[in-house]
Length: 372
Image (cartoon, rainbow, N blue to C red):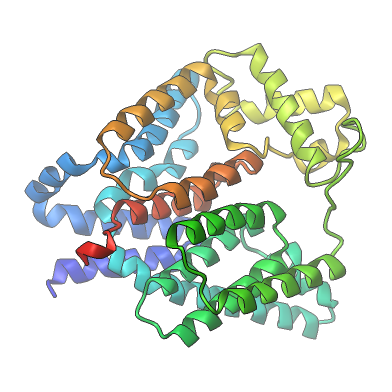
């Protein structure tokens, strides 16, 4: 293997391994992977740009944040967070990703298990193994769960035996159950239904693995003090809203009210949270003020930050891309992340951006089975 190719794969592997643990290290590794892929052959990198239609939606998201930064004079951290969407077109290598993700997920699950055992040894109770207690010092469960799911998919498409694949899925789903991320599980279920419909097959290991998911989820709900769904069947009252559903409804209504004050260009990425919390204060939404909660809806989050003009630009770029993109089975990706964006402001953290960019680049490099 050529030295520059080896260096590129090394840095890309480090990016995948660092993602759940170290934002700055992951970002630096991706920049180095991009440089190693592009600098040795700039002419080829330029030719490759002509095949970039599949990445236009990612670049549209980057452009949205860039224009918003220029409009509102926001800090550069919002732009830097979106940098993977710009670099992955050149830095991505499917084989490297598929090989590294299972290793990264295995290390992550060992870290979570070891950290929990250590805290129990120090005197903590067993709730450290469920919900956010399991994620001591790491990102929220919706991000870690997505990373684990992508790793399980990598195992699924690799040359592992059926027994190892089933075991990896079972362990992954057990951890997802222990994390107790209800909205993530709903999105994963929608994607799984789509996959089963398209594949017209049902793996023998699917049912036993699902049992591990249920076991983990029931354990999480039994041991943790995680929030319930909330006052779903009662009129929404911001003062009392603390559940998974009623809080999101209150936050969405607050975002719409705040957006109505600056509908065209939005508040900007640096002022949107203050505008949202002002509505919280007006409504006496105690839980939102205490936790400084964002909208928990990525579409409304972007509308609040960049306004209708920004969202229109994003729609135009996406439609232009849809006319030029190679045909791919995008349903799995769009169902999972699209539904997740309705319940989470997923792209407001660097890990969320990186995971979405990784999944999109992976789908863009997909090859139909008949061509393999």
